[in-house]
Length: 188
Length: 363
Image (cartoon, rainbow over the protein chains, first blue to last red):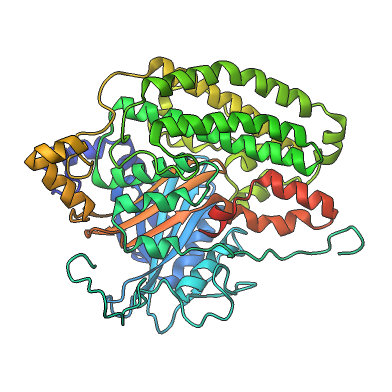
């Protein structure tokens, strides 16, 4: 069985370069760089063939709007978005991950932004995609990410008077103070 | 409300929120399958298979053709069961109870096939990471063939009861229409988007589990109203039948699961007699096997549209983060927009034609 984490040999890398997905991703990346400038994207990856770019939150709205209006790429479809919490990444603890889809060319793109937990403010995408409304409410509900310009930023799945954001990593599923049960061997 | 007219509406959701995404962060991969059952419980096998395929993609496991075809058969059966419920409930909401009772018998037969294949009916927990848990039994094949022979006649009767029925058409034609642009902007997928005229189907756009081997059409509507959604679902049932027939006829011989001992449970008999099998059994059950580091997005065409799984693995036994793209949750936000200006009785019809499944809505 092929181990996807293993370092690829030069021959395998050459074969990968011939792969249509890799070629398409390279073309999309070149377009992204020409549209928004190379410095906008701090990190570029291709996990399992899906082009993933990391950018700063200041650029996010401009990039997504540009991608939606771009005549060649036509990213008309916001597939999903979700929050994420990496407590050990200092000043980059929280993140938002967006999946865009160009239905015309069948290209998927993942955009990530990271920002400090003390200042979890992100521009809203509701003015671009109507579907962002509940997705952003969900991210607010579970991660406490504030979307500036959102028309109705309230909790959506949890009860209104909840006073914390449960998907943050400091909240474990089980009560951490329990003493009748230890989870030394199989716990995370 | 202004008399019978709806002026505005605000959906309040979350009443059966069960924190699946949080729970999943503490569970080994195979224990997450039962969680996916409980999202769209009208078509659990699609959720199960979608999850297995996501994990297989992360692990780099190649599933043999036979298992892929078996999965396709089960997923299309689930789609038929899902659409049958949605369309017949739409009939109930417009006052036609007979069609619902009639096709519920067929759903029961589908559930009996599930039972033969995996042992359970509603929340199926079907298949494993790496393939299916067991081969189709002769009884299962026999039941399936019998059902494939009998069902088309029932479906024809169901269609002739509704499709040109004056009373039904008066209730659904031009009720709750949505344009293609608006539907895309609201993130519609599946039959609801296709009723608006966009031929986006994950099975064709990003084929998985050998869907590229089968010949089928994607039905589309024109103006995305309740009637179009009804017709698109009916036609999809016929297309699913086509796929099942092809898959069953071409069902290849060979193993029904991948040769991936690290992830696929060994047969129970071998566990008692064979050292390696015992070790793998223990390691899998106790969640001792680490997954590779990586992140993967995989989507399948669920009963209601693009059902996506976004899995981030940090190399441990559980996902670091698992996000479900639940089509119901995403398109239900358009509902308040769609019902403004209609009457209360139309709002009920629109809701049932959108097929909002509470389990999937709230996760």
